[in-house]
Figure 1: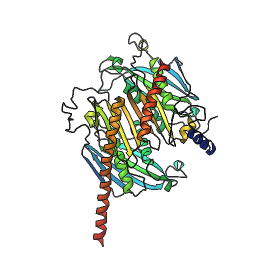
Figure 2: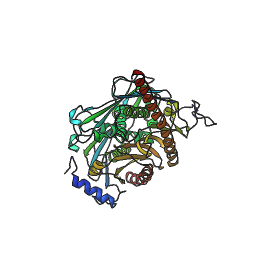
Figure 3: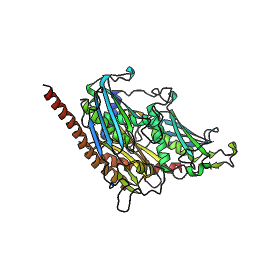
Figure 4: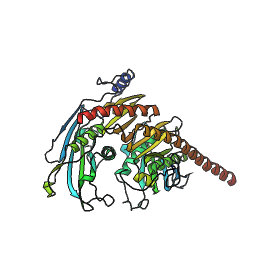
Length: 248
Length: 257
C-alpha cells in the first residue's frame, strides 16, 4: 500500500492498466475435482493468480489434543510456492501465511456443519502456484469448492474477492500493480444466501463513502463468483455422471 | 481470579443480560472499560507504555537500532512489530514460539500503525540505501481479560509517541523524538447472539461468535480492519461497527493527546 509510482493505474476514461473498468472482475476459471488423492479439490484462476485447494477429511484429528468432543475442527494451511512471486519466497510458513490460514479457517467454519463430525479434523490445504494480488480470496474461493467436492455438508459455498483503491478510485479485484501502488486493499468474503460477512480485512486509507462503495462492489462480485463456483461443481458432477453411465 | 473456561451458568447469564441491553460489569453495549496509559515505564527502552483496559494490562516497548534498509525502500526506516502472549498473563497462554493468536495480534497492531502512516519512516533515513533506523515494537500481554487488540494497539501508539531516537548511543548525531504524524486508534466490537458490544472482556470474548477490529485515523478515515471469529456479520452490523469504531476512536484519541 505504501508504494508510490508515477504509473497511471486508471486512465481518464476510467480504464485500468489491464483494460478493466472499476467494477470489473479479472477472468475467472474454476474447476472442481482436480486431484486424485484428496477427498475434495479445486483449481482457481483469477487473472494471473493460480491456486489449488485440497481437502482431506473428515478424518482423525492430529495432534489429538486439538480434538473437539462436540464438533470437527477445520485446519487450514495456506502456502505460497517458492516460485509463485517475483523474488523467490523462502519456503515454509511465515507470519503472513499463519494469519491468512487462520482467517480462512474461521471463514470456512461459518458454513461447514462441523457439529456432524465430533473429534474429527477437516484439513484444507491451499497452495498458491502463481500470485498476482488477491491470493487469499482466490484461496478461500477454491477451498469452499474443494469442501463441496469432498461432499462435506455446508450451509453454503463461500465466494471471496478483494476490493481496493488505486489512483483514488475504488476498484474491484486489484491486480498486482494496483495492490502495490494503490491506497487500500479490502479482502472480503460472504455467505451468498444471507449476505453475511465471514472474512473482512482492510489496510490503507478509505473514507466512509469509499468503504461503503467497496462493500457494495464486493457483495455484487461475490454473487458473480458464487455462480461460477456452482457451475464448476455442476460440470464436475455432470461429467462424473456420464462416466458412470458409459462404464455400465 | 481468571478462569480458563467460562461456566454454562455464567455464559447464559451474560446472554440473558445482553438481551436487555446490559452487561455483567455494568457497562453499556457501546462502552469501553476504563483506560489508563502510562508512558516511559522502561528506561532501557527507547519508548514504552503500559496500558490498561479494565483488568487487561499490556506493555509495549520500542527499541531502535541502525540497520540496512530494504532494497525497495532505500530511504525509509523499517518498522517491525512482534507480540508474545506469555504464560504469566493467562492460564491459556503457553510458552514457546508465538502462537497463531500472537501472530495475528502483532499483524493487526502493525497494520494500524503502518497503514495510518503514524511513524514518519521517511525521516528515519540515516544514509540512503545504506543505513536507516530500524524500529522494533515489542508487545507483551501482562494480564489478560479480553480485547488485546485495542489495548496493545493503544500501548504501541503511546510507546511510539513517547519514543526518542537513540542517536547519541550509536554516534549518529543528537537524540530526537521519533517523528510521528497521526494517532491511529483500534476499536474492537464483538458479536454475541445478535448483539454488538464494544471492548469485549474475556468472558464476552469466549462466547462471542465474531469480532471486528477497526482502526481509524484523526480524520475519521478507515486505515485497517480485521474480522475474526468463526461466525459471520450482516451488512447492517458492519455499518454499526463502522459508526461505533469511528466515534469511540475519537474519544480514545483524546486520552492519548
